[in-house]
Amino acid sequence: MKACCFTGHRDLPKGEAERLTEKARALILLLIQEGFTEFRVGGAVGFDMIMAELLLRLRDEEKQEIRIISVIPFPSWRAKWSSEEIRRQNMILEKSDEVIFVRQHYCQGIYMIRNRALADGAQVCIAYCNRPKGGTAWTVRYAKQNGLRTYNLAGGEGK
Image 1 (cartoon, rainbow, N blue to C red):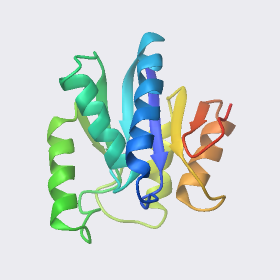
Image 2: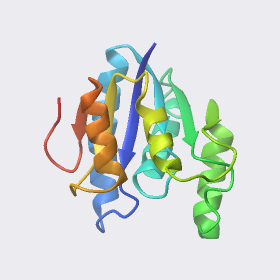
Image 3: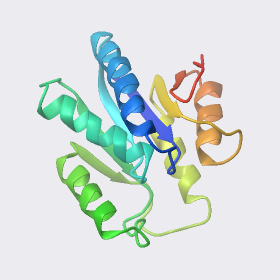
């Protein structure tokens, strides 16, 4: 099984979502042609949510034979989200082929644990990373250190 994971910032520049979706769609379709069937998303607002919704459209409307795995930090991870964000995420979780909670409760480092779970066992990482620090940058470095072919949709392509 060939797997691809996604990592990206929660806050995206205004108007960036459409461009990201187009670039990611083209890349995902190429990966599907290469035999990739599993796509893992991290369950955050922003890039993760946009990518999950794109994957659902590819699977459900365009009939691509892919599995969507939502890798979630812990069950109450979205306690501070808006009702619209929760509604969108509920739809994603309901339609995911599998939902994995990496822990049952919050603990220190939970998001790093989730980020490792996204990348471990994957061969490709599609990212949106436009700053050198933070969880997304850490995940991109982790992916590269572990030999994942990495694409940064914010500009520049990794390994």
